[in-house]
Amino acid sequence: MPSPSALRTALATGVFVAACAAGAAGAPSATPSATSPPTFAAEPPPDASFVDRATAPRPVGQSRPRATAMVCTPRVCVHAEDARAAEGAERALAAAERTLDVMLATGLPMPLPDGGRGGTSALDLYLGENAPFPAQALPEGPWPSAFDRGPAFARVRWPSPGPDCALETSVAEAVLSAAWVGLDAAPSPATFHAHAGYVAQIWQPCPAVLAADVDRAQRSPEVALLDLPAPLMGWFLEDRYGVGPTGWLSSSLWAIGAQPLPLGRHHVDEPDVFDVLREVMPHRHKTLGETMLQLAIARAFMGSRSDGQHLVDTDWLGEFGRVRFDWRVSYASLPRRLAPQRPLAPTGASYLWVDLNEVPKGHGLLFHARWEESHVFQWALVRMDAEGRSIGAHLAGGIFGDSETVTTIEQLDGAAALLVVGVHVGNDNRSRPYDPDVGPARVTSYEVTLHPKSP
Image (cartoon, rainbow, N blue to C red; front, side, top):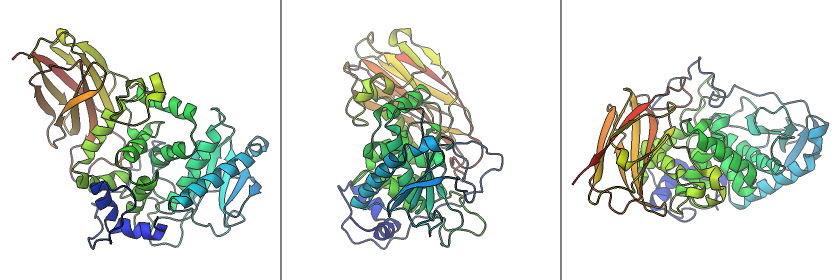
């Protein structure tokens, strides 16, 4: 595995993009190309009225909590904020050391030394029940660097109201996030969790926590991806496009998205992960909207609906993995005009189910979707067999400036059900594409009409 500095050089020169496009199974071995790094359109600063807890940009600098150093190694020092937290110090230290061992073995970047701000140069991990998130890495504030990055300290909520194994998973997420602050300190806590939360579950799993988070997320698919409790975005990207060990892809996205540090603009996340995906995904012959649609489709095949063709290893979630459908109708009841129960935030999804048990041979379906102007939706009509497996899909929408789409399935022979998936991609202003850090999220709705089609 290359060193972290070599990884950054390779990423900046486009090797990561080429490796993803080729589907390489491991670290790229070719000499880095001379192509220039991707450029990103300038974005306005965050809207001052944007107060959403999950995606609001980080404040500049963070204050360390008052705590007592309990146990330390040369790499990690665990501090307890109270007597109850002290009971978990030894376990937290062991979990942090295991996480660092995995990161070292797989060639992932390590947390930067903090210059003794916590008493030693080791990573400082603070345990306490008043931590605002289950796991969080916080930048130390301005640091001498040309990029917005630097050392961090970590906070982990303990004791936690969840199962006992939550401590190890949270520590793994916090340690990995602290390393990513050394690549890019600007992303929001929700962005860190959407990626580091999944990697932590692979390295130090806590199935009960993941199942509960997935259940809550799948009950509200209309919610924006970064506002979900489950790290579904990182899960999908690592599963579908990851090369090499788990965590490499997410670390690569962080490295590519690192931004120079303009004077007086600490922790403004531009470019962010969505900007990076807009540049990277065309090398996989997909747009960002198509990627979000594929993620939404994959969500429909989790848990007891898993067909083994989408996200791997989700069948163990059982009923906790099943996504909520807005409607379930039969082909015999068509034509129908349907709308979702709740409006969709950008990157939120909606699901309709059509039973095809009574479709006459040779008959098909006409799909017509309309939505509010100034928004973009993308749609997939997935035909499914009697075993719940996908046997083909029709894609529609995703055209900037359009607020409706029409698609025809000529015949539905061999299909037992039709899954309709819609995803809200964001606004249709190409000069200001969807950015979770800029302005309040605008939710919107749609109207779908389904007509039976005779031969």
